[in-house]
Length: 251
Image 1 (tube, rainbow, N blue to C red):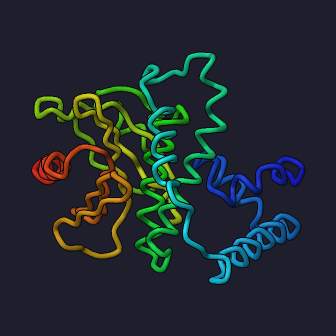
Image 2 (cartoon, rainbow, N blue to C red; image 1 turned 90 degrees about the vertical axis):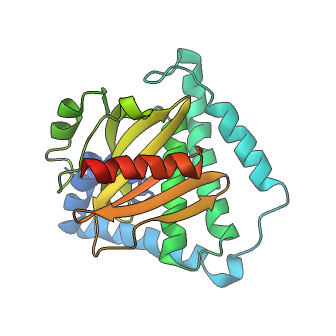
């Protein structure tokens, strides 16, 4: 990759808007290019300045309601794997709403810890996948197709299973970027609802389950076999725990 190719992508790379393959390509170029590395440092300095305490303020009244209304309107079913031609106009709006949603989460929770930021990233990733036609990269319920698809795309082997018999059919998988690293994502359906399960290596074993709710979305964390799992959806906590149990039993 040359500077001419990399420069237009630096802002998108910094904001984690590129796919994993392109992100790694830009990152590799920047490591050996002073010009592009300096541009990324400028982006970082700007973000640091904008995150100063003096600029933090409470969101206006009704923002959460307006964002959630807009998100649900844009996320209405339009076909699982393809947008109708007229809906391409909604994609820029979808990206804007996802960014605003993550900002609202961070501000409302104070943005005071890495855990708060992680929850905001996970919810934003879930909402973005529903709105921007990026629910899956590999669309199949065949676990024997999804599992090898991750080879070379993430540096670990995520467990893949189809739980259709238990009411959680596998839809497919994709790669996302969470907590500063690539994460495998398995996508399941629960009736008409979507459940995203984000997976990446765990630094240490963690307590069995941990629930959280952010703006109406339920999140559930568990770990096993050296991996961390975070499920995100608007289904009930009981359904989320049932899915986690299925993963643990599949081992």
